Length: 102
Image (tube, rainbow, N blue to C red; front, side):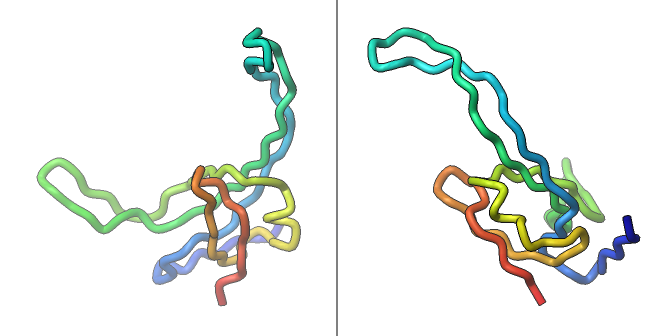
């Protein structure tokens, strides 16, 4: 793996990696019975600058690491670790599309 340099002046997301898999969940079937089902998941990991907001009770600096839910692994298929990216979300706050940023 190569080194990643994150420009402290860049105010967007930097792609760090991804994970996908399956987990067991409980759902109600059509008859209202609880059944166990396997569900897929897809997540991507990014960094972004912390908010510059300060108050008497809060201050922060640097970067935050974030895990973002994705609609499918396809959203990161052409990305490389360290890419600057723009993320696009659906109404459930899942990443539906990623575009390179510069």
